[in-house]
Amino acid sequence: MQTEARAIVIGGSLAGLWTARVLADHFEQVTVLERDQLPTGAESRAGVPQDKHVHVLLERGAQIMSQLFPGITDELLAAGANRIDLTQNCLVKARGQWLPQFQSGIITYACSRLLLESILRKRVAALPNVELCGGAQVQGLVAQNGAVEGVRVKWKDGREDGVETAVFIVDASGRSSKLPDWLPEIGYAAPEETVIDVRLGYAGRRYKIPGPAPEWDTMLIGVEPPHQSRAGLIYSEENGIWMVMLAGILGDYPPTDEAGFLDFALDMEPEFHAAIQNVEPISNIIGYRRTENRLRHYEKLTRWPDRLVALGDAVCGFNPVYGQGMTVSAMAAVTLGEMLGASGGKISGIAQSFQKKYPKIVEPAWLLATSADLEWLGNEEATSFPEKFASRYMPKLLDTIPSDQTVHKMFIQVQNLIVPPTSLFVPKIAWRVFRHKLRFNS
Ligand SMILES: Cc1cc2nc3c(=O)[nH]c(=O)nc-3n(C[C@H](O)[C@H](O)[C@H](O)COP(=O)(O)OP(=O)(O)OC[C@H]3O[C@@H](n4cnc5c(N)ncnc54)[C@H](O)[C@@H]3O)c2cc1C
Image (cartoon, rainbow, N blue to C red; front, side, top):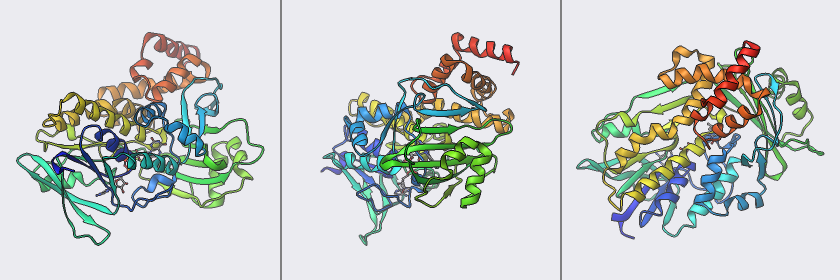
């Protein structure tokens, strides 16, 4: 395989896998360099500490997944995933009120993150021009004449460390990406960052689904600003397992001991507590706290090394409670593929254009996540007009949902990134929100 036509992806998690799939259509060879050894099955990896926690794939993510990997949803279902209508099969309490259940056709394939990643990894590994290399820790970039042309790699299998060359390099190495350090090493500036941190913590535990199982597949208890800062999710994964997640905001972290975990659930919602109280746990309770919304503004750098792209959590990580990261990284990979497709093989210049476009790709998800978080932090922490506006309007819209199916359905579509957030501001919806506010003076 000619190295001139090789692309390298740094990181073999979700963003790296979507990207490898997309790049396989445009380069002769795609090499994914992943620091962890890659398991053959659905096993946790040290490089992805969040992989033991609940992961919901939004409808938009599921749609992209099916486009990139035809037939994959059947594969997931055959492996035990559950096809869940997000309004019909989910019992949801939002802002203190139980929501009516109705069929929306907005679907997720509920399974563990480990199963999802392992099936995606198998599909990518089967592509004839993609090579997945585990045990390959990237340590820096090699650049010349304004473009990257390789990465420095430390191999964990005893192979001599060296440089891997490529004509196109994608950083998909997640929140812990070292790109802000690597850029100055090759003569470029590090990016500014926007951070909105509501200090949310997770605690997760797996249980055997009791028999007979309840009528719902998923129970979601949302926070209730400004008093109830606790949330919880019971999520049906493969093999008859419930993933139970508790979350708390503003440092109200859920405990990771048995009694504390159950007390936290009881305080949040007695019905949630009752559902798990006498059910058999099959794992430890695991905590997680690195949950801030963080956007690295690579788009603002005036100088950018050609042929280098960054995407996924390496550029923008979200408060995970909104379930957006996997889907947004898929959207970014697809956009990159479209730009490469439109280039007619002239890849020079694409990298910086892509980076400049990045804020637009993440904007819908960013607005949703930050407007909800700013309700806790205070509107003055909003950093842009859309953030300020959304953080004032969204609470009123959320208050309308329990009594208005039209608003509810539109919100679920927006939340699943199927339609843009502007759909929530169209007169048909804004009028309903306004009418609700007038009626209840909320
Ligand atoms: C607790 C939690 C729950 C979440 N829940 C959801 C959810 O419900 N739905 C959802 O869509 N998203 C969720 N997310 C976000 C989701 O995990 C990520 O958005 C998704 O994994 C895509 O991230 P990524 O591939 O960019 O980075 P990561 O998943 O962090 O992967 C980065 C990869 O790069 C590798 N790597 C790092 N540095 C190097 C290096 N120098 N050299 C080689 N390899 C390297 C790592 O080992 C890792 O494999 C959650 C996140 C957290 C923290």
